[in-house]
Structures are given as C-alpha cells and as structure tokens.
Amino acid sequence: MSITDYLQKPISERKQIVTEPVGIKDQFWLERLKTAFKFSNPLAVSLHKTLVDEYWTLKKS
Image (cartoon, rainbow, N blue to C red; front, side):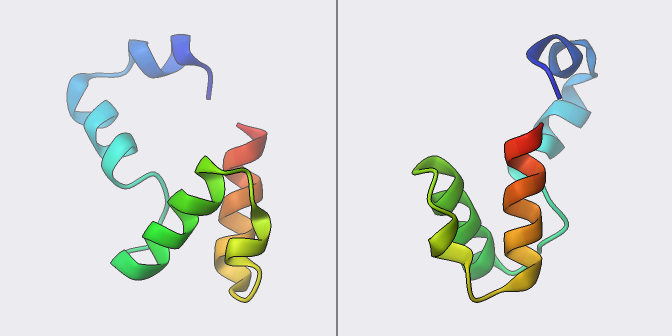
C-alpha cells in the first residue's frame, strides 16, 4: 500500500492498519513481527511460518 492510498482511507481504517496491520492477534507474535520488520530481519520470525508469510507480505507492500 502506498502512502497516497493510506491517506485516502478514512481515519478509522487508518487507525486499524496502524494498530493491527496483520491478522495476528497474539501480542507476543505481533511484537516479534514488528521487530523483524523494523530491523529488516526476517530471522526474528523464522521459526513461525505465519509470521514469515506476513513479514514478506508487508515488505512487498
């Protein structure tokens, strides 16, 4: 998603994207995904297939 697309969304949708960017509800795994994405380190999520998939999906967008 580009920044232009993001800014065209209503505030409520933007807030949801920021707080829950993926379908992962477990706070521990969500924090690992955020850390991996922040430091561009896919190894931080390497033991969890769902997180690896979400990591690469976020990197592509």
